[in-house]
Image (cartoon, rainbow, N blue to C red; front, top):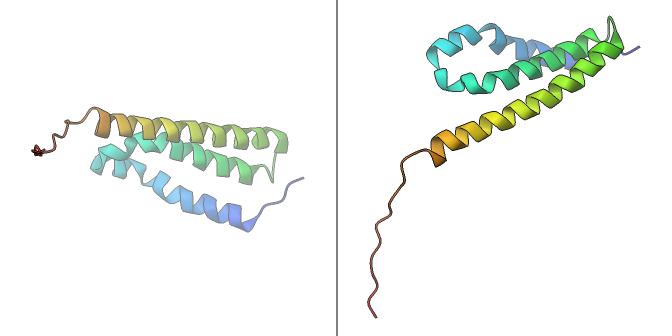
Length: 102
């Protein structure tokens, strides 16, 4: 049976702070909302890691790996959306060019 490790518990406590304040963060900064599904998945990953030491280790081990995979996918999607909305969809920049005469 897996045992509770202090570093995993510490990471869970650190991750729980922004999760607890997320409603306040969403009111003030709407632009970070696209990153929070991945962040919540990371939180559930570490929650599953810590719960695996107490009850149902096989189920929580599966949940840990599943939500880690889901977090990676969600962070990639958020980065692609950010890239699309800021770079590709943004205004085209026209650089001033000078003609060189020979």
